[in-house]
Length: 224
Image (cartoon, helix red, strand yellow):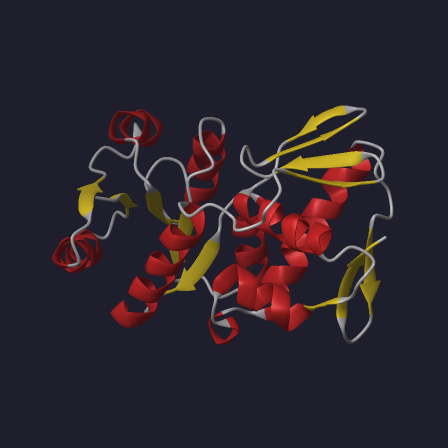
């Protein structure tokens, strides 16, 4: 049974979502003390977190950063904020998805089901190590290493790099990447993929792996 933690200060929304998720067989916890979100997360050890941005005391961005110190568990932001910058901030802080309020329960459930399947199902590649130039991706451990050391990746960054490594020196279309990441690209803003690609490039560059991911304008990306 998967465990889901809801960090939402609007009690009505939290209870409605929790009731629906429990109906699907999930074990659900609702945060009550918004000064101890991190402690409650460590106590519950959930498989996925639903996290509001506007919270008492500290906002969702702060708690996302605190959770990321302990775990790569999928985090889905729920927010009434509509600015593109808020979505980009959520993803840059380590979130896996961003859903604007008001949202349909069907949309929320679809994203949760897909995230849990992708996160807790091993990649189907036949080899344990995918390598290219000065980097090695250890698939079973989801770890990336190079001569400068180990590079920590989010789950989406790992999946993107895995796909690019499996097709190195070939163009991988944006639609193909989005379909592989989210299974239904109609649910995802195109900016979301761009944010993840740019964040991955930055991490590679910080470890001396510059210009590994090349953009093919109007098509997609290629690992060179």
